[in-house]
Length: 94
Image 1 (tube, rainbow, N blue to C red):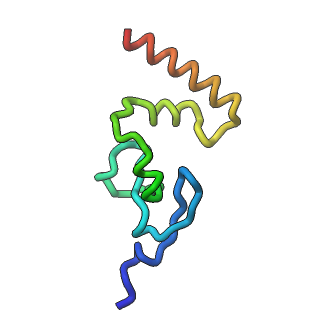
Image 2: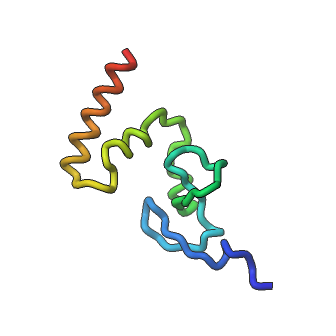
């Protein structure tokens, strides 16, 4: 009668910033485990941005971004931390 909650809820695409109905968006889980839903808050991509993303495995990219402070620190600090972590990870793989 009133439609589902996802038809009425509005979300923001994390890639382009467009606001759209949740039912028109695609869920994005930065931790890569979208099937475990308990206590999880998803981010969203519009269909266009979702289609433009690579669906190839990213290894530990998301964990490295989190560890470097992505979205939580200034650009200079983030880039320095990311570079340090990336260098550590490449040495560990050798």
